[in-house]
Length: 293
Image (cartoon, rainbow, N blue to C red; front, side, top):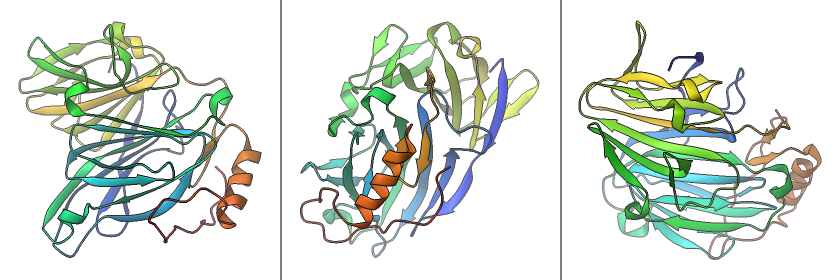
């Protein structure tokens, strides 16, 4: 990208049976547009006795976006939703004033060898919507806008760009785009973008001037309209960004808000277990100790 201001290396964190690569937030960059958190899950080979089991945990003030490359996750939440997500589909959960959900390996896969690989993303809500009613939307893979241009494949997973609009119901101007190419190509799409922009290299590499960037790196620019790079053969990258908010958003654990008082209230409510419950679930993840950052 022609105006790279920051390069972030993926930082691995162990969460049970597999590694998660933490990409955002980063000490030098807390958000890219409204995107405040990005995790790269896997790729993880799970044996017949290993499963993903994330017990019920709460969120406020954000929307979560789950996008899988391989594997399957059963989502259950306090709205009563129970739905399996598979590769290429999108789970979009808006926490608003508060939601609780669990993420587990589906029952029919729990005694087989399996893979899990994907992205989990948090998008902060605008200040005026942070206390909205929670909701959940599932969008099937076939409903995601996809097209090819000059031999390069594009998917508009969320938001608006290229004169297209994803059916994922976002709440601020943003975009989350998949770009795949089997051949080396020059990509110049800045005139389709806006706000801040970040590019995550999943596989292959990109070249900017004389510099080559490899997988597990995010390149961040503050001027999306200058987005131009060379993508190598057999590469997949994800472009994300949008208009940043005028006010700072704070993060504590799974809580995001422009108002620290709302985070403090959420901490008390979760400790007292007054958040809504996930039907059929009895476990929960306890509140951790770290400070608001």
